[in-house]
Length: 217
Length: 217
DNA sequence: TGTACATCAGTGAACGCGCGTTCACTGATGTAC
DNA sequence: TGTACATCAGTGAACGCGCGTTCACTGATGTAC
Image (cartoon, rainbow over all chains, first blue to last red; front, side):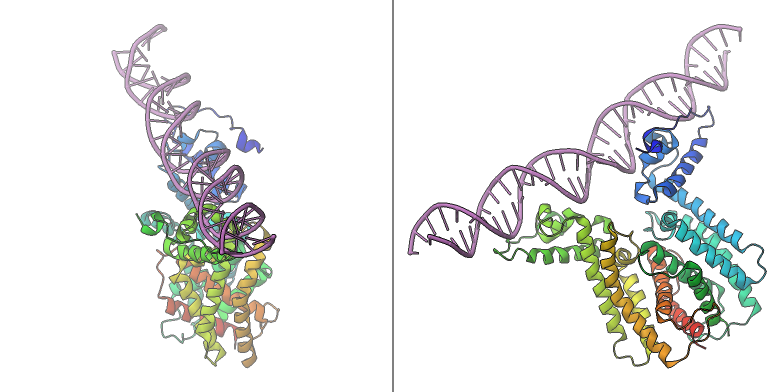
C-alpha cells in the first residue's frame, strides 16, 4: 500500500567504476528505514533493496551478509549520537552544565528515536566478538567525550571520599555510573512507556543533581 | 543432536477433567527453555511443545497465541525476581542496608540470568496495551517493595532540598531514580558485556553510596 | 575511426528453512440407561 | 452388570508466509587494437 514499499524507485545504474557508490545508497536507505518503520525486524534485506531501488542480490555486492549491513548502520548511528551530544554541550563553559546538557540530549535522543536507541544499546551482541568491538570503539567516541567532561568536573572540585575505599574520582568509573543512570532511565522509557514516567527534563534534572551531590561534597 | 529437542518426552495424557494441568506443564517447560536456550527467539511454539512432550497444536488448547504464552512466562519471571529481592532484603533492619541488598540482588539477577532479564525489561512492548498493563502490575510488586524501602529511608533522615524545586523526598520519584540507575548498569552489562566493566559489587556499591549521598545531606 | 571484447553493475527466479497457526481427525474414558 | 455414546485430551499433516541467500544470467560501457 505504501508507494515506497511497492513501487521500486526509478534509478539508473552507476557508471563503470562507480559501483561502489551504491554501498552508500544502501546504507542511507537502511538508516532511513529504521526511522520510517520503527522496527528493527522489519528492516529486511528485501525492504532495504526496495528502498534503495535495487534488487535484493545487489545488497550482497557490498555487504557480505545482513549482520555486516546492520553493523554499518550502527556505526553511523553512533556517530549521529556523538555529534548530537557534542552539539548540545558546545559553548558551555561550566563543565557541570555541559554534563547536564549532555545527559539531557542523550535521553532526548533515545526517547525521540526509540528504535535507533534500541538498536544501539538494547540489542543482543552480534555474532563475532570482533564486530562488536568495532561498535564498541564507535561508542567509545561518545563515551570518551563524557569521560573528558567528567575529568573537567573533578578538576574543579575535590570529590568526597568514597566509602567503599576505591578512589571516588576515577573519571572512568564515574562516567560509567553516569552513563548507566541516564541509559537506565532512557531504556526503561523506551521499553516500558506505559509506566508512569515524569517529564524527561524533571527526571534528568534529578539524576544530574543527585549524582553531583553524591559525588562532590 | 540434543535429546531434549529431538526425542519427545514420554508422557501419557491427563485423565478426563484434568486436561487443564497441561497449561502449567507448558508454562514450566517454556520457562525452562528460556534458561536452557538463552535466547528468546529460539523459544518457539514447536520447541515449547516438544519440551513439554506434546504436539504443537496442543499449546493452543491453553493459550490463544504465542503472545499470551510469553506474557504468562513473564508474569512468572516477575514473581521470581520479586521473591529474590525480598529474600535478599529480609532481616535487614537498617533500611539503607536493605536497599543496598536489594540493589545487589537485582543486578545479580540480571547478570546471572541475562536472557530472562532481557525478556522482562528490554523487550519491545507486546501488542495490546492491556496485556502490557498486566505485566506492569506484576512489575509493580517489586517496584512497590522498592518504594516502601525508600519511604523507610526518607523517614529516618530528612532529604536535602532539591535544586530543581520539586520535593526531593517523593518516594515514587526516588524509587524510579534508583531503579533507573541499577537497571542501567544491569542492562548495559547484559547487552554490551565486552565493555570494560568493573566488578558488579564495586559498581553497585558506588551507585548506592552516591545515590544516598546525593539524596541525603 | 571502427569494432571486438573483457569487465562491470545489476537482475530474475528460485532454494530451503522454520515459523505460527489451522483443520479434520482419533482413541481413550467416564457416564447414563 | 453390560453397553452405547458424548465428551475429552491430544494429534498428523499441512497451509501460507517471509526470510536470507545463491546462481546463472544480461546488457551496457569503456578500452585495446
